[in-house]
Image (cartoon, rainbow, N blue to C red; front, side, top):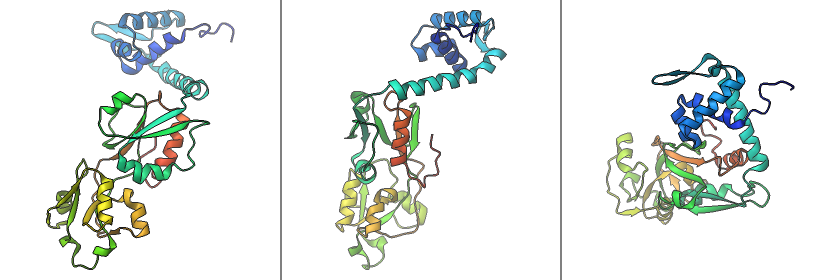
Length: 292
């Protein structure tokens, strides 16, 4: 449009305004954009001069977004987000390999069975890697991460894959040998709640004390299937074992921990379209958490 205020308007001026207005600080905007505070201030001043409008009120203790700046901010944020997403889809990530990092148990019992037929684009290979140490995330660079926890993280893409639920299971051969509470118990090291929490929920005795403890959920499931005892299992992860009768559920009661498995990714790792495809494949359709 002839004579538009936006003619030849540098995009970095607009990005400086959006970061500062959203964060409420020139200093925070400088950290986010990798510029100096002086550079942010200069670009916003140039933008204000071009628009003929004061976007910030300068005070001794900082800046405050003006009425005009506050009114313009949602339009700018939406416009920049649209530009970023469209650029990603059309010109951005063209990696031939997408790394997906998760525990061996999660890869075995949840992710691998759901990857059949999944495509993230022509010639894009999904490389599944077993997560061993938290520091691995820093060494391996950009990747999609699946972690057990409360979902804390700064990544723009984040979703809880399912609601965790724990209940005792055992092999069919152990049934009929008296009350299941008297059978040997199996334990798994790690962040999940265990037999003490189960006793607190149901009133069952916390004994017998488990004599077999495993460092992975997969090993615990294998021991339960072999008839070595009762496992307090993640019900979502033993769906197939329960459906095929390899394991039997022993109680209708369920522990419902606040923590569960979350999937995270940066917008430098996947496009929005790829993220949506991953969510469609790995997200539990019965999950009550809201997809991003």
